[in-house]
Amino acid sequence: MRANTLHMTLLFMGAVKRLQIMELMHAAEKVVLNPFAFRIQQFSCWPRNHIGYAAPRNEVEELAWLARLLRQEVEQAGFSFDRMDFVPHVTLLRDIVHPVAQCFISPIEWQVSEFALVESNLTEQGVRYQTLATWQMGCLG
Image 1 (cartoon, rainbow, N blue to C red):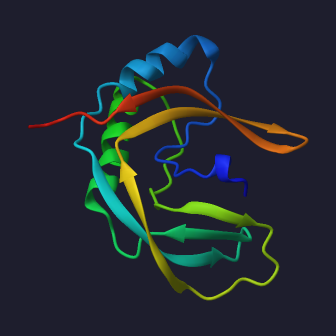
Image 2 (image 1 turned 60 degrees about the horizontal axis):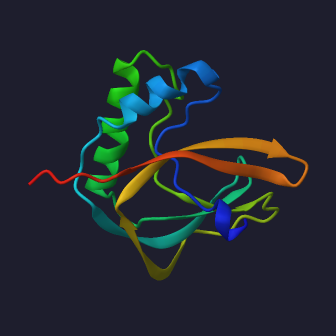
């Protein structure tokens, strides 16, 4: 994976019509949560889809809340999306032939002060990501 493609997907939308992007942005801007930090501390593989990923060792309550709030707002706006459970991870490797067992890595501190709407496009050179909008994490007081 290229460094500029590393990300954590909070919600996978699939195809969204261009005319609906503004509605989607309005839904996302309603999400309010204080900035937070968490640690990525383990590496593991999903053998079924040949992916190696890094993830937090334990559940991160604030991260789960962010994903949950975003899903609620997007659903209330009438959008459909992938209903798979949110599993926080950052994909690092694809097409792994020999998956490795879960192992702990040196902690990586991840500061969350914003989230983004990102469009992905598959090209001959791989997936290209384009950020359409970002939202700063709000202050709940």
